[in-house]
Image (tube, rainbow, N blue to C red; front, side, top):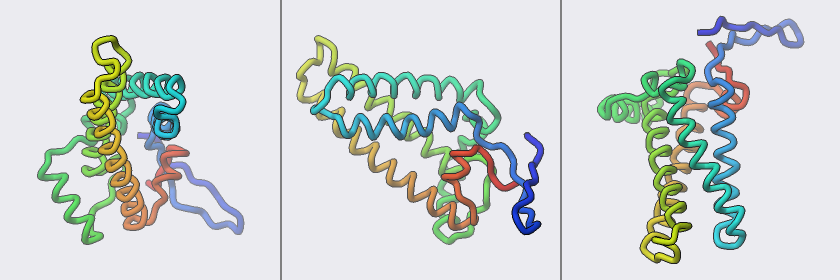
Length: 186
């Protein structure tokens, strides 16, 4: 783990030490995925070429993130944040009471959310790719599966944002800023 960094601010006040948590790949993956999902949602059937291109890049990013989950930095590895369901449920119970402990990396619910998002993004990508093949071109059941998985993804995104907001308030730290700069309070 990286050594804490102290930064003096105006007026001689020194903020709390910070440590590197999210590596550049994780941050680039996260924000690129946000932009590409928004692009895919906005283009849909209207701008098919851009929609399909965004979908292929999303599929590639998800593949790279899965690989990074095994070989990446400490906090990016699945082994660092994938927890048993009972631990996830216990954390969610504690969170609802604003008593959940703070984690430097992903908390148990965040780890479960990452798995769910990666899984659902895989389904969205796979059904989208299949719709471009001769076997499934114009297939209404495949299109319905693709659209249903997109709506499920949007539901998970909403829960993800709510969880980030809750954890940010509960622990007094800006998790969005941490995902941009890569650092959190030690």
